[in-house]
Amino acid sequence: MKKILFLLFLFFTSALMGQQVYNAAGKILGKFVGQQFYDKNLRLKGKVESVFVYDAAGNLIGKIDGSFLYDGNGKQIGKVENNDFYDALGTKLASVSGNALYDSYGRRIRKFDGLTLSQIIVYYYYFSNL
Image (cartoon, rainbow, N blue to C red; front, side, top):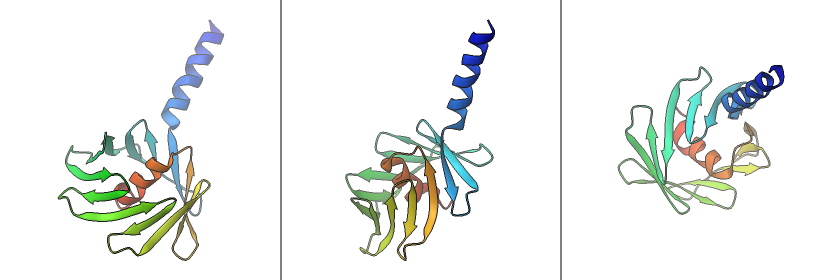
C-alpha cells in the first residue's frame, strides 16, 4: 500500500511541476502544464488550442500559422526561422540555444526546463508580458 501511495505521489507532483520557465537569475516565472500556461503563483494566464492562443478569460490573443505569428486581430507580430525570433519588420529579437533564450545581444534572458520549441515560441510572443 505504501508503495502505491508513493508512486501516486510521484505521479501527481511531477504533473504539477510541469515544464518551467525561469528568468536569467534562475527565479521561476511560470510553467506549462499540458497546453495551459500558469504564472509563478499558479494562476492561469492562457492556453493553446490547435493554432489558436487564448488568455485566461478565453479571449483570442493570437494565431500561429506556420512560422508566422499573429495577434488576436490578425496583425502579424512575428516570425520564427529555425531558432531565431523576429518581429513583424524582420528585426531579430531573440534566439533559442539549448534550454535558454538569448536576446539579440547574446545575453541569456530566460531558462527553460522541459519546454519544446513551440512552447517557448508561444511563451515568448504571447505570455512573457502577462
